[in-house]
Length: 89
Image (cartoon, rainbow, N blue to C red; front, top):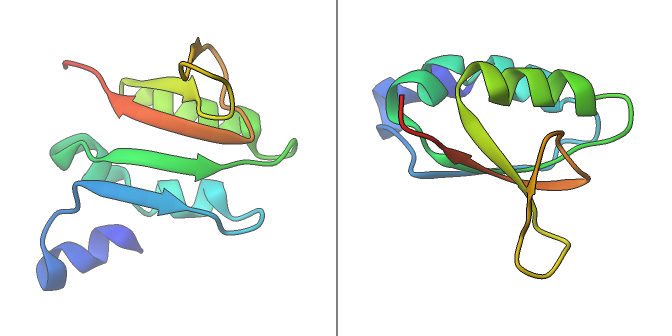
C-alpha cells in the first residue's frame, strides 16, 4: 500500500495510477497520503471503477479534471484519464 511507503520514502507530491482495474485498491491504500499530504493524482479509470474512484476522490476533497480535453475542464465524475487536484480542507 502507498500509505506503508511513507516511512521509507516520505510523502509524495504527485501520484500516477495506471493499474488496469485496481484503481480503487490503489487509492484505498493511499487514503492517509490523500488525507494528510494531498498530492496531485493522475489516475486512469475504467467503466467498472469510475464511480468508486470518484467517491474516493470526493471523500478526500479532490477536484477532478478531464486531462484528455483542451483546458482540462473540471468534471463531476472521474474520466478515463483524470487529473485530481486537492482542494482546501
